[in-house]
Image 1 (cartoon, rainbow, N blue to C red):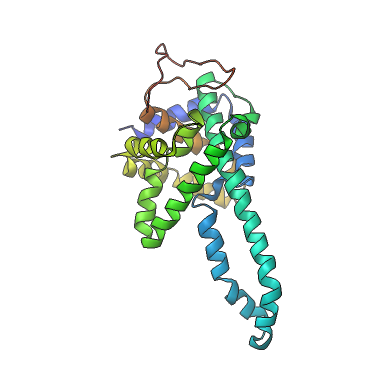
Image 2 (cartoon, rainbow, N blue to C red):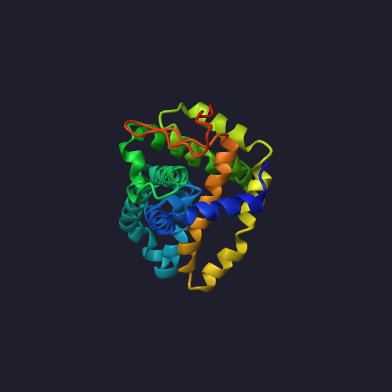
Length: 256
């Protein structure tokens, strides 16, 4: 179990070395959809469910059915495009963002803003897309049961993007099992860690929501600290031509 004050202190200490790069990375990742959290599936179904209400506000019932046959395909096409962007770009961008923070922490400096696009060139793009899609699908299905199971599972799956950022070719069953094992007994503590940022979130909203752009990297750096403690060890697993970058003397990677 980690101390919240300790991970926040370490996270901020590391973040100061690459803060402005982190702001850009978090902003780009958010714009391209990695902040969707619950995934595209629930959002699409929810929007479709509101369609009749939207049409009813602007059209008489007598012409609603006629208009629906014209409007519905257009709306469905827009929703499908949004879902595709979230699945094929949003999820990989989230994994790339995690990669950036893990590498930057290890390098003690920015790993490069381009690392947010790491998933697209790591050689296992489709595996990342598949696992992130099923992560969001499972969350949506669990949420259908009741809100509480969905929240519970969201914490169980919390480390999946980080695991993929080091193991992009890992089997989906192993990824889900690894995240579950890492979060066993730690779900509520992660919730408390997130809760400790409420003051910062309120401040960001008070600053016309612009402040959240500058606060977000702090939270993501702290979340990276949590992952590294749950993972064990301080080296970043690498791919291709990259070299292992040790933070401490122990250069052994922890297995999953």
